[in-house]
Length: 280
Image (cartoon, rainbow, N blue to C red; front, side, top):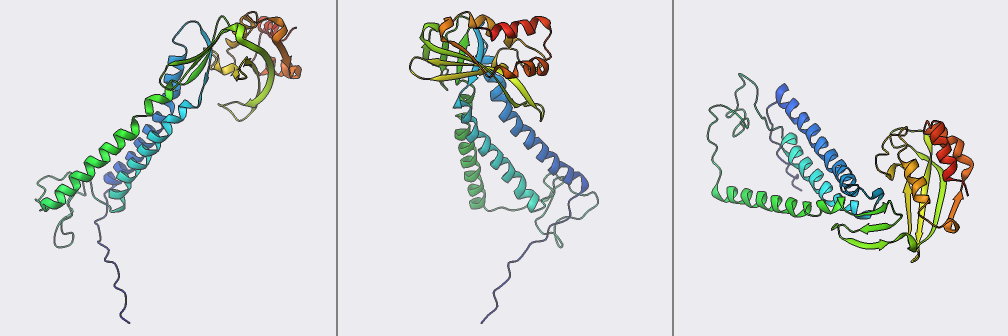
């Protein structure tokens, strides 16, 4: 039986130090862009949600998942476009005083080379490359179309105690006046702080509407409440509590109030407001 012919592996010239740095700098740029694509919808969502002064808190809906497809397509596409030339060790600027081309490296020249010899490519090959490039651009553009839908879906809590719900197209789909709120629950809980590994005690306001929908608003979902030591949410919750009928308000899990005071570094005035919030 004849031996199976081994696949011929074309040797490539060694990459220069500058070329290797460019390849790996491209990796950092790709990761930076990927990170931007993930973070930008959250930043823009917050800007849109609190654009109106009446909004005191906003909750992000599942519409943010629309960014998943564009992000995944961009990540995979850019990685492939980086990996293919890197795997083939295609030189970019090349090494100084290094002889490219025949006899040792036929048809191999740096991408940016002075006086680069002409390498003949058949018209059919050029046409195939052009078709693939156009198809790739169209695919990426179409995949990115859902991206703007990721920063619109939200549920807003307004100063008068009403709720407004917006879909991914930024169209208001539901409006609940404060009179249609069936129950309001205030509770303390502990969760993992997003900027550290420790568990932090927080306060949450849970609204249940007459049609059975339940909406939860945590401390950091109130306007301006980015820092654990900035308690803008506290006066907003106290004021909102006054907008609802006392008989529909319940306070639960109050055993963590002291921990909330400690974790949020509350002063005497804020401590009094917290106890007022959880008073009957």
